[in-house]
Image (cartoon, rainbow, N blue to C red; front, side):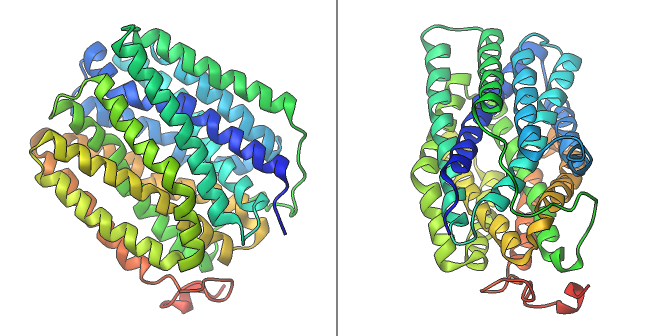
Length: 392
C-alpha cells in the first residue's frame, strides 16, 4: 500500500512551516540574548529549562485531543509557534524572553508531538523510513532558505532582530491558516487511545527516548552557546553554520531513512551513538574555532539517524497507541531536558568541558540500550534482553 498523496503534501507543508519560525528563533537566539539582554550561561540555562517545560507537559496532548482532531491541533500549534517567534524581538529583556520562549515552545512541542503521531498513523510501514527522511529533507531545504536569508538580512541590510523575528513568525502563522482552509480533515485508519498509559513492552523505547532528551539538550543549549561565547561567532556566521547543517540534511536525510529501512534500526542507532560519544568528547577538548564548527556539523548530521527510534516504535507498537505514546514519549524525553539546562548552566560557569563529558556519558548509556534492539523488531520481538519486562 502507498500513502495518499494529499496526506504526504500536508505533512511536507507542516515540515516546511515549522522551521520558518524555529530556524529563525534558534539561529539568532544566542547573539540576541547576549547582545540585548546580557545573558550568561546561567540565564541561557534557565531560558532553555523553561523552554522544555511544555515538552515535559506534552502528555497533556491526549486531553486536548478529546476536543480537537489531531490534524487541527497540529495546525493550531503551528500558529502558536509562529506567534511566539513573532513576539520574541518585541521583549528584549530577561523576563520578556522567558515569556516569549515559553509561548513559542508550547506551539513547538505540541506540534512535534502531534506531527509524530500523524506521521506514524498516515505513513505505511514499508514507506515510513524513507518518507520520514523526505520530511526531514523538506524541513532542511526550508532551513537552508531561512539561513541564507538571515545571512543576507544581517550582512547586507543589517536588519534588526525585531523585524526578522516578526517576519518569520508571521509567515508561520499565515501558513497555518492556509493549511486549515486548504486541506480537508483526513480520517484516521485506527481510533486512537485517548488516555494516558505506559506499556511495559515499550520500555526500551522509553529508555532510549529519555537519554535522547538528555543528550540533545547539551547540543541544543551548550554547543551553540559555546560557538558564540567561547569562539566569538557573529550571528551571520552562526546562520552560515546552520546553513551547512541543513544542506547536509537536505541531501542525505532521505537516503539515511532508506538505509535505515534496509539495514535496520539497531545498526543505525549504534552508529549514531558511537559517533556522538566521539563528538561530545571532541567538544570537551576543542580549542580551535574551525574544529568546533566541524564537530557541530558532524553532530547535527547524526540527528537524521533518530528516524530509527520512530520506526522502531512503529514496528513494535499498536496503531491505536501512536497518539498516546507520542505524548508520553515527549514527556519522558523532556524529564531530563527541564532539569539539565539550568543545572548544567551553573556547571558551565566553572567547567564547560565537564558539560560535554556528561553528554558523552549520556551517549554511552544510549549505546548500551541500542544494543538491546532486535535486528527485526516487531510486536512480540521488542528487545533482545529483558523480555520478562515486556510481557504485560
